[in-house]
Image 1 (tube, rainbow, N blue to C red):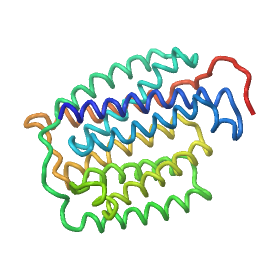
Image 2 (cartoon, one colour):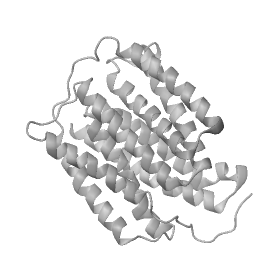
Image 3 (cartoon, one colour):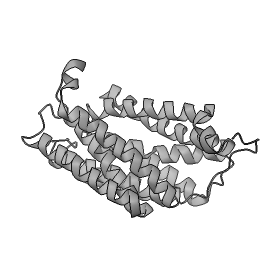
Image 4 (cartoon, rainbow, N blue to C red):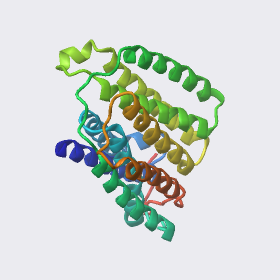
Length: 269
């Protein structure tokens, strides 16, 4: 469990730092040049590391723990943006970061022993059906949908990726290549990335990010406990529930932080 907690923390820090790096690259380049800026490329690479770390974590920890820890990356981003991007840190933001810290410690403490039982019969079929439905919804919203519906669809897609990763049977890389749930993880991840990127085109990053993390904390957390036998330590159910709610509320506050600005520098085109 200790290694899994460390992996979840790596994911949280990775996502938080990656956002700052990508914002720095986007502020110092425009158009296609953004994709070649070293800071932006480093951010994408760190996103990949964070995602892989999160997959390790969901194999050994309850989903409500992992997803809540990953949502804490928003607090990391806000704090780093204060020092590296010149963002203004409001008093409410400082309180929200503190709430996230206490809530995440509570969530981690509430984690019980992870169930070794396989996912229930029919889970794979249900997951593939959900992947198809999510794909259809994402395609429909991509054309005319607003920012928040797109962020909601994206959050559900990323939730599907986490749930499928949690339900993967044990086996080597060769076994994973023929495992439908492994391909579902990739499919959900692609849909989530597309939906979130589109939601940022249609609206402000703050509300979209708040909706995204709310979905990513609540959907996998509930399904993990009800369907996949994720365990909560005896007597910790209420503290865990309140902590998860506090994470969602604090992330909503942090998502309204004023936009940050990277230090002035010539923009590359």
